[in-house]
Length: 313
Image 1 (cartoon, rainbow, N blue to C red):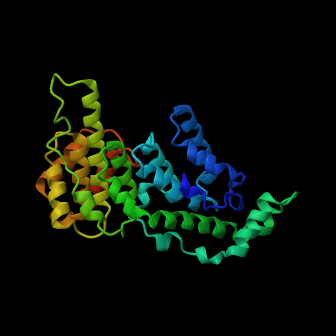
Image 2: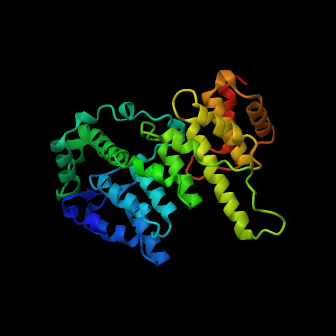
Image 3: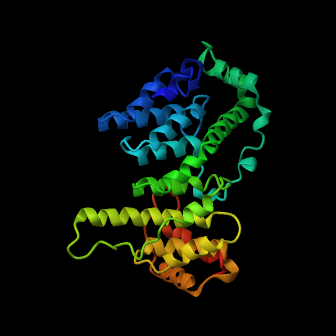
């Protein structure tokens, strides 16, 4: 992967020391061997996203991960996208949306390159490290690394919009869940609204349909449900295209698509909620709707409960 050639990985650190093993792990993500890919994902997760902490090497893996996802020949691109989200967002969960990076990274300027060097030196180069000596700047340094990873992803956010139109529904599902953390990317609302809702979640699933086609329909429904949730967390009232897109989804034959569309409308049109959306929310609450949309932390039931609370119900 040519993009790795310009990075001096030996001069960067991750959770276990110098990042000299990262290029091989990134390359293994495109291996034809599923076991090799699983090992690479596990190793990278532990190295550049260690229990939520990002490191100096973390921001530098963003570009190679985006390159891998951009290539249709990469196996398990949805898994690579999951890894990208961990690197870019860390342990933040969707109960912290809408996301304001300025507020999230307040105080990041408290730490500078000299503080970062001191933390690295203490952790990795001293025989008898004195952790207390850098305790007062360690949190700010960790925030500095997290901000660098987020901003590296932000610079590549236009690629996320391309993934929203991908042929693989699993990629679309994760891409929608990722884009919402970068709400200022130009064209995001329109790209989300342009994704077809479909008349129902089983458009091709007649009694003669195969298990494969049913699985494909389910994946497509998860993708649209993720899109709906992303639309729900964008700022301000929905534009005409967004409103039309979400309203159409209220008629979907798939429960997750209907419910997430109603949730999104409740979040963004509290004072002018369509009757059909309220009906969907009340029914979902009565029936204790189950399930989680891939890429999202809160369950469908949780999304419904918060939507009803916003409506004062």
